[in-house]
Picture 1 (tube, helix red, strand yellow):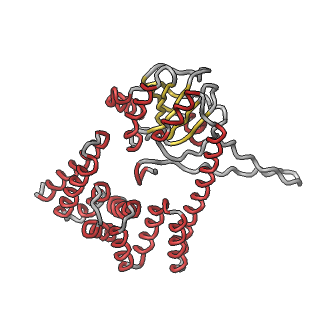
Picture 2 (cartoon, rainbow, N blue to C red):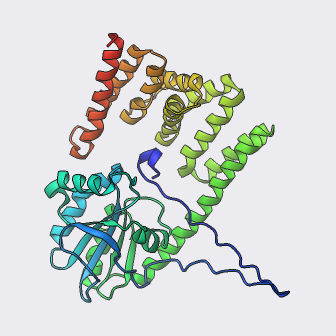
Picture 3 (tube, rainbow, N blue to C red):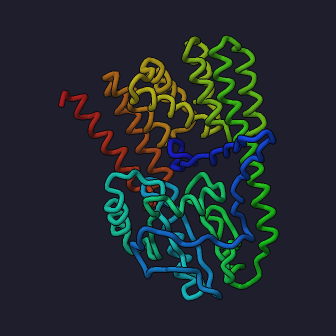
Length: 372
């Protein structure tokens, strides 16, 4: 996931430039760096420091390693930490789990990461390191394997070969098979390559969304909206991106169309579409130059028409009410967010920080409503 939609971020690798020869003959283009995939030799471990656990200089033959990438701001990463601890304990002596911190803001980076690890304590009971200033691990592992979201994990087998790449919550079975020497690396590579092809197609569709927005601005409105319908029909996983673009289009010149579509999104079953609506609201409410009027319309639609209360959707609707000094409405949606949180995440300790965010926002709105 990207950071705005659930805490994951990154970018497609930049296209390589072509070398231009000064001679009459055409120059050959530079080759794109080889994709890191299962079956390839694992890159070196190049970290700034090991924050927890013993220093690991190289992959020892006969031992299995998990190299997992995470960040302090990444919700899914934090949720997965206890699972990694469980795997580290379960396979102690046979496999070593290394959590490598990446994609952090530079300010106070070292202190922030160390404080986070210290706070986690025994919940994060495996080796932890952070990337170098030059982003060596990011470039030689994540970017080399075209992994654009975190958490992401790489299993390195007993020969120092990358055996598997994927989400750490899905690696229990492959990790056990790698340890037992029964894992099919060839099949893993084929599966990975198919996923890369799918990601490439997704990337092209994302570009098509951008083209549709440009076409709409140029007056080709019907064609642009039809293009969005076609994209989401082919790839439902892009619903949040598609609906975000559609809302921006309609907000530019069609208030009634915006209201009608916002209501459709709020009343629908797709949580991704609902996220698109609430992200539109909070981003326009809080960013300089944002469309405050339509941020409020989106928030009102969520408050009045949301099919089933979701804590995230409701929480991010509150700022639009707040900036318009409608503190009572902000209080109402935040109270609903708390109730929805308890129904959905009451027993999830890893979500406690989010509950506190809701509570803090609620207290702030109550004070504002009282003139404090």
